[in-house]
Length: 422
Ligand code: GLY
Ligand code: MN
Ligand code: MN
Image (tube, rainbow, N blue to C red; front, side, top):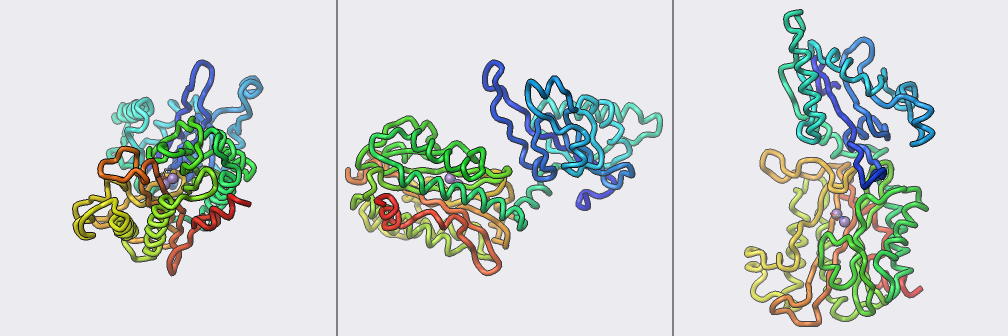
C-alpha cells in the first residue's frame, strides 16, 4: 500500500475454479499473487486494498457461511474468519461486490489491477468504473489511471523472505525424499506412472498435498521429450530414467530433476554423458553469487557441455565455433534455469534496462542443464541413442555465494548407484 500511494485502490481476484467434467472440478489452487498478499486459500474471493481508508484498508470479498452449501461442498472461512484468521480489516459477501466496489473506487486516482487474465472480471471492472463515471455530476471523481498490479508484486516475490525460504525448504525436503524413494524402488518392468506413485507418496507423507507441476517420469526415449508427462510406458532394462518432479507447500514449489539407470547401473556411454552434464551443472552453480549476471550460469554450462560433446565425438570442429554457431543446441535446446518460488517458473524480470539482471541474496533459481539424444539423430553413433539426461537443483543466492537447497538428492553416478544397490 505504501508503494501504491494513498490515492489508489488495488483489486485482485483469486484464480477461477475450472471444471474437469460434469459435476467435477479440478483441484482449486489460488492465484499466486492473491495468495502472496492474503494467504486466503478459498475460491470465489477478491482482495481489495484501499490505502488510508478510515474504515479499513484491507478488504476481502469472499463466500459467506452457509450451512447447506457447507454440508454439500465443504467448509467456508466466512466473513468473520476472513478478518479473524486472515487479517482483513473488513470482509463482505462476494455476492455484494457489485454494490460495494464502485463506492470504494470513488475519488481514487489510480486503479492497480492486472488486465487480460480473466475477461469476465475485466468486464466487471469496466462496469464498476462506468458506474463511478455516471456519478460525475454529483461531484464524484472516477479513477483516471490504470496500473498493472503484477509488476510491484512480482518484484517483491523475486526476493524471498526468511519465512518464504523456510517454506521452500519444506517443499524441497519433500521432493528430496521423493527422488530418493524413486531411486530405491525403480525396477525394470515397472510402469512410469508406478514410479510417479512413489513420488506422490513421499510428497504427501512429507505434508505436501500436491505436486508443484505434473511430474515428468520418462524412461529411455521419453527422457528426450522435454515436457513429457504421459508417464505411461514400461521401464526397460538398460534405459535411463529422467524424473523431473517437485512438491508444493503452501503454494511454494520445489523443482528437482535426477536421471538414473532403471537397473541401478550406468552403462559406459550413459556415464560418460552423465558426467558431462554433471560438470556443466557444477560449473553453472559456481557462477551463482551476488553481483553475477543471470546469463553467467547458462554460459558456463554451455561451455562445459559443448566441450564434452566435442570430446565424445558428438560434435565436430572447434569449441569457439560450436558455441558461436550454437551447434550444441541440437542436444541442449533449453536454458539453464529460471526463478523459482510460488510458481515453478516464477515471476521477476530477467533483464533490467536491457541488461541481464544481477543476482541478489534471497533470490531462488533452478540450475538445470541437460543433454538429449533421440534415436536416429543424424551423424550420431548408436551407443548414444535414447539417452536423455537433466540434472536440476534449487539454488538460493546468499550473501557470499549460494546454497544448493536440494543437495540432499544423490547426484554423482557413484552416489546414485550406491543408493540404488542398497
Ligand atoms: N519442471 C519444469 C522445469 O524444470 O522447468
Ligand atoms: Mn524441473
Ligand atoms: Mn525447472
